[in-house]
Length: 235
Image (tube, rainbow, N blue to C red; front, side):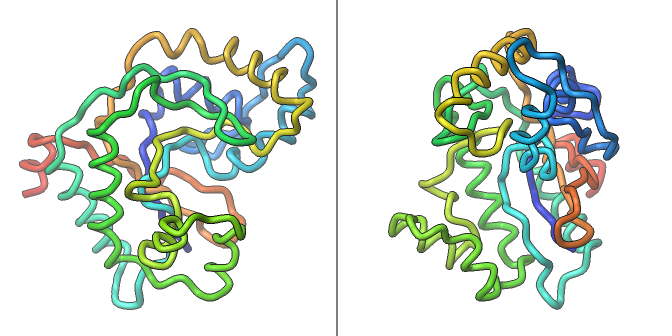
């Protein structure tokens, strides 16, 4: 079993439901969803090009998937995550938009969010003691061969290349796309998500995701409210 600490809006948030429909799976319930009807793109093409983010569930990565260290239990991780979340105040992200990230698309803020960058770095540092070291095979899988020196150092120190100064908040919506498919999917994504991006997204919880066995789809295990009220409840 692997765990990951992510951000995702609550289960019934309109953005969560819109993303679940687009990806074809709800990460809270595990339920398969019918993709939206998009002019010019077949349902099979949507399903094929969303296979990777569909398995991972709609989220922004804070602490990438990890196995628990030998002396750590799930209950220990849960209790620490509840306390950690309660010690950090909720905040709003700048407005999200559909953006191209290399050869895939996702949602990202229109301007950088330093509060989120600080939170993500804190999560990576705080929960590294809960993480089992990567095996040689895992290191190879996470190193595509073109990492920069800081990214390579992050992989070996923190278990993931894109943390600390290399972090960029994003919520993945597609897998890698061909140059031919890029404009079609960009238009479809903007049409589908525009109604849900008019209001600011509140970061009011941290989500624990679980992968019960290798290759299994990730599911939301639990949401952990942020803020002082949450901290008092578990004190």
